[in-house]
Image (cartoon, rainbow, N blue to C red; front, side, top):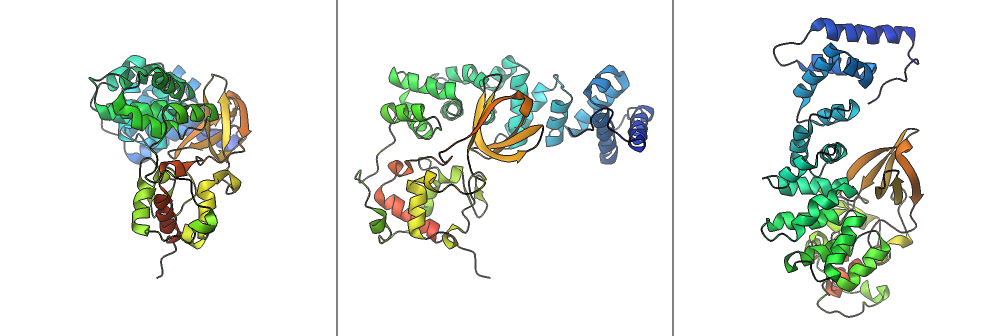
Amino acid sequence: MNRDVPGSLSAPRRMWVRWLAVSVLAGGLAAEPLEPDRVATIIEALSRLGPDKVKANPKLKAALEQVLEATQGTPRFVELVRDFNVTNQDAALLNFAAKNPGDSPGVDAARLVLAHGNFELLKTSLAGTNAVRIAEALGHAAEKDIVPLLEPIVSDSTRDLALRKQAVRALAQVHSGAALLLKLAREQNLPEEVKLTASSELNNVRWPDLKAEAARWLPLPRGRDAQPLPPISQLIHLQGDAKRGAEVFRRETVGCVKCHQVNGEGIDFGPNLSEIGAKLGKEALYEAILDPSAGISFGFEAWQIELKNGDEACGLIVSDTAEEIALKTQGGIVTRYKKSDLSKREQQKLSIMPAALEQGMSTQDLVDLVEYLAALKKAVK
């Protein structure tokens, strides 16, 4: 919420804010749904006054409830709940999260329910018709509180398999969740039907110790040739199939599409690859895939942050102000953190792009993938 620091408003500005507040109070609460302009006016007035004054005044509190009703189902609703510390809208927040599990506002909605400690509602939602989408949103929230919610689902054979796989994906985004999955694998308690999903996710985590353990207990499927790769000097002369390379790009176990966009398809996280063939030759493309940390693009440096509550996150800093930073994590989710909540932030030496991607491909898969990327050039008009 962008409001001025108390005492910093000029006299004309203070008069304007008072006028807005009086307008809200004098206008009363309409019996009919509010018009968009009136909603915007009320939100502006309430935002300028701040949550403490709103909560202390019954009329202002009623006005807030009305604009919450008017904005329900929109990102603005989530912002209002967050900015005014509203704790009685968890059901509406989860409904929004279920409809937008892969978008930043939807993930923020799920994160708010976690912050409110409404675990009973979350458990109920994970048993409902939107369970898979709720699990996805919780995974993107990447907070340790999701672990006890999702852990029982992984091994429960009575639950829908799609939900169990999504629970695995979500757990793998949290250090304690990934460690739990590896413990199940070590003890041979990880169900067979979710092992491939676990292998794909855990071999791409950002924690080196867990990634090494995943390679031991849940190795990725070997490529068809299972042979050492030829040197790049030879790879660039091999013939590839761009059409088949596009399929490799979208393959779950390779995961390029999870972090890169090509002509609007995919996740907006890493560099856009729509015209990568016009920027990099085949040799550079091979180097970028086989050794991603050798040349990290400007603006795509990975940052690790740790919060005072014990949570942590890793991603790309997309905004950095005096009060907060905005971090984009894998999946394209942008989360804002107050700097006062941070205990540590550190730039990582390694690329956020996973290493050893070639382990999930045959030599021909890799050659086809590079052929596809090399063909991505600006369309001729």
